[in-house]
Structure formats: C-alpha cells, structure tokens
Length: 359
Ligand code: ADP
Ligand code: MG
Image 1 (tube, protein in one colour):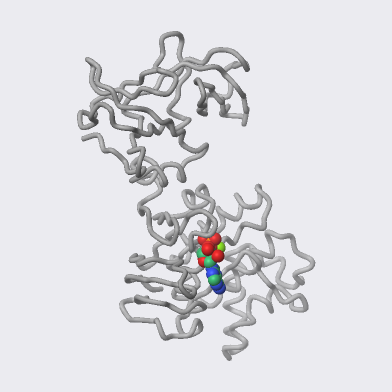
Image 2 (image 1 turned 30 degrees about the vertical axis):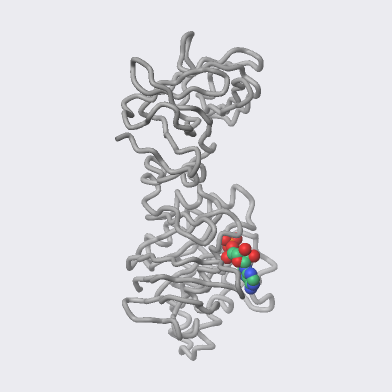
C-alpha cells in the first residue's frame, strides 16, 4: 500500500494543455474518486499516475518517493479498465494468475493467491471456466481478481463498470466497495458518474477542464459546493439553477426571478440589491405546499420513479424540477405551490458561478 502525491502536475499534447497544475494528496488506504464530465482529463491523469502516460511538468510521489521515471511495472500499480481483455483460451484461474506466472511466482504460492482472490470475489465456483462461459459481471470480477492477486501498492480504476447494465453496475459497485474494505489498498477510481463516486469514495475530487474544482467527502460536496459547477454535478436529479436579480425587502435580501416572483434569501446580508444572481435549488428541497407558498408554477411533466416522483414545474419562461414523495397525487396542468426553506437555497454569482456564502 502507498500514499500518492501529485505535485503541480501538468500534461500537454503539443500546445494543447489537458491537465493544469494539479496538486493532490491521497492517503495510504484511501478510496478517492476522480469525477468530471467526459473529456475533462480523468483518464489522462490516471494514466500519468500509472506510468502509461508521460508527465509534462510536476511530480508524482508514492510514499514520498518520486516515481516519475519508473515504468508502470516498477510502480506496482494494478489497473482495471472498462474493457477487461481477458485471455479467451485461459481458464478463470489462469487469467487471474497470469501476471504472477510471468513474474516467476512459484506454483504453490500462485495457487494460494489465486484462491484467496477468488474467495474475496466469489469466483471460487468459476475458476475452471473460460471467459466465454461467464456473464459480463463475472468477467469484470475476474479482471478485478487479476488486479487483487498482485497485491499492488495502488489500485487504479478507469470507469470499470461502464459496460455493465444498470442493475449489475449497482451490484458491482457494492462489491468494489466491500473489496476495498477487505484489502484496504489505496484506490483511485475514475468515473463520470457522480452517483458511483458518491457511493464508493471516501473523498471525491471534481475535475473540470483539467483542473480541480473542489475536493471533499461526498456529503461535503453535496451540502457545501464551492461553485455552480460542483453544485450542478453532485446530486440527482441535478440542482435547479434560476437566474434572478437581488432586491432589498423589509425582511432582508430576496431574489426576483424573470417572471416577477420573489423568493426571500434569509439571513444573507452580504447580497447587495441589483446584483445578478443564480439561485440553486435542489429538487429534494422543493416541498409541495398549499396556497401562498414561496414559488408557484404549473405542473408541466410528471415522472414517477417509485419512491420519488420528479415534477417539472413551469414558471414563466423557465422551469425547475421538484422531487416529491411518490405517493403524492399530482396532475399535469395543475398549479404547483412550492415551499422552500431559505437555508436550503444556494446563491451563486451569475457571472462566474462562484458561491456567495451566507455571511
Ligand atoms: P476523460 O477521461 O475525462 O474523458 P481524457 O483524459 O481521455 O478525458 O481526455 C482529456 C482531453 O485530452 C480530451 O480533450 C482528449 O481529447 C485529449 N487527449 C487525450 N489523449 C490524447 C492524445 N493522445 N493526444 C491528444 N489529445 C488527447
Ligand atoms: Mg476517460
């Protein structure tokens, strides 16, 4: 196991910068998710850590020692990719043990380690099969077995579950988490799926255009996003963003929306009247009220998901999504009166998306 430290790390392809001055410390045994939209540089960063990609500038340290010039093999990392590329002519046991064989590990020791990995991943009954006789989830588990068996310093995952169907993805997610709880090997997990990052990681690092937007525990990012990008990326359904102007009322500052509705901003004394704002409202913070609520609109769409129903509410030229209890009867075209606690609101600067703090 190892700690991983990235120091002012940059990567360019020719004149195009892809990773910009990233510094990040990952503790020994920690599970960190790198999350961000497609093309933001997640795979590039992971491949730099693995040694598969050269570094343009900066340093990578494992347990305090630079590994910049070490080959992937010498770094002792194990990577699990989206495509698992098993050897079709080998059994599961041979696939899992292949790297050990190449490394010259004796047969009895190899057998012991393969069986241990198989036990951890519930692959014992499948050790004699070939990949073509396995389901997608089982194949992915074999790919993980191949990584686990090497007892690496660091696990590197690059969207390993993207090829699986939704149900299997959820199941494999739990398996990866419980695997990490057993082996406690430092893990860096790349995904564009914020739910995967939230459910798996001790800490999430949100990347955007090759830069870190914010890092923190899943709940820190959810409750205390630094800016509109992170706020919109973390949480599902995504946060609603409504443009507004700040106005002063007798009760304190308020937001006035394009359709003229006014929403009190609570105790946010630092917001001067006239300032262009973006108000962030999480769907789960919008409650169905009787009359005279904070915001009113018309139900445009109703999307039941079971426990929760997502309601698209039209307000003038804009709309927002509310997530309400699935048992609540609700009809398209009917009015929706929304109650929203001022403390649940997020306020952002409209120009740069920066969060305007409560005080
Ligand atoms: P992600 O994994 O977050 O989707 P990548 O790390 O794969 O993103 O890519 C980040 C950016 O770097 C993209 O704009 C991509 O086009 C560019 N890129 C990746 N690999 C190369 C390469 N070998 N040459 C040039 N540009 C590349
Ligand atoms: Mg990628």
